[in-house]
Image (tube, rainbow, N blue to C red; front, side, top):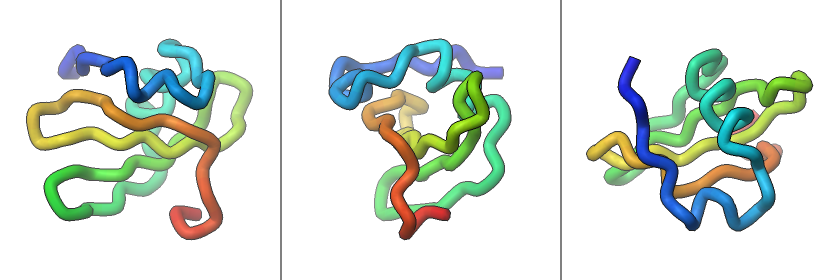
Length: 70
């Protein structure tokens, strides 16, 4: 598994790094976007979060999953 760099912007919504990594490691859906992938996966407590990962494997976005990605 790639040790993705978590950028500061991914912390904007208060999602813990460990929850971000858990969601990526346990992804249930991947949405290919223009220049990045949006991954939906569970945080450690089971709540679904969305995680944006660019083509360099940097994580730049994380928040509670929005309906459009569920």
